[in-house]
Length: 229
Ligand SMILES: [Ca+2]
Image 1 (tube, rainbow, N blue to C red):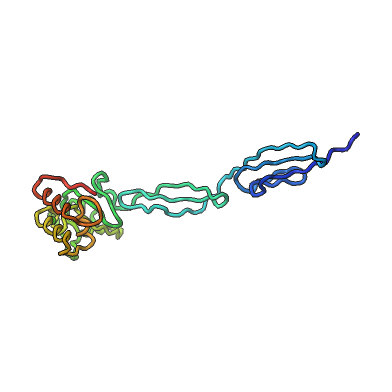
Image 2 (image 1 turned 90 degrees about the horizontal axis):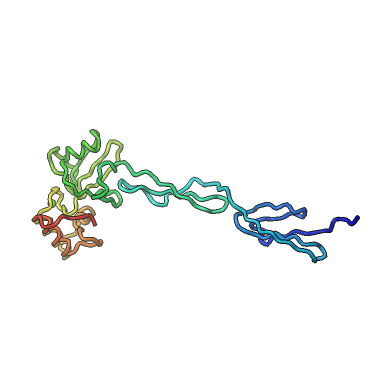
């Protein structure tokens, strides 16, 4: 009887899978490799394709999109073995219940409201321990309309700066005075702070222009509703 023919095994990519002298295949990392068995005299050769998959060991993940009061955030997990990624949604921050997401959006800690609300109504929405202050730190009377620049502090300490689009003087109403101020900003006669700037930009972009002043004036006389930009 003839002894078994001697053969050797090779893997075309040992970073994907290795093969032992006896022909046992061991996966190394996800990918595709060719395992070839060749007789020592070189006359006979056979190749099979081996696909190595990863069962994934996820890391602790990192925040790739921070949650805000308006939008969910995103957390991305990376497999420590094969570097594949997956994402999970992160809950919105406290304060979201205040906001009609169809008519408001948030940038950073500034919450943009465009609905007129009294201070009492807003505080009632937020919780009885919420505190509403004017931009200068003065208390707000419950019957006052919420104005731009007011700070809403929730019971948990979350602070939100409220902005009513078009209301750049903080009285909660859109008037010719707001339009005039926007025009003065547009021609560099005034330097707005952050909330005044945000309240004045009503037609898009990142600068106050004459178009913003015009839109605010039209809103003041009821010709136009200001939309979030
Ligand atoms: Ca105003």
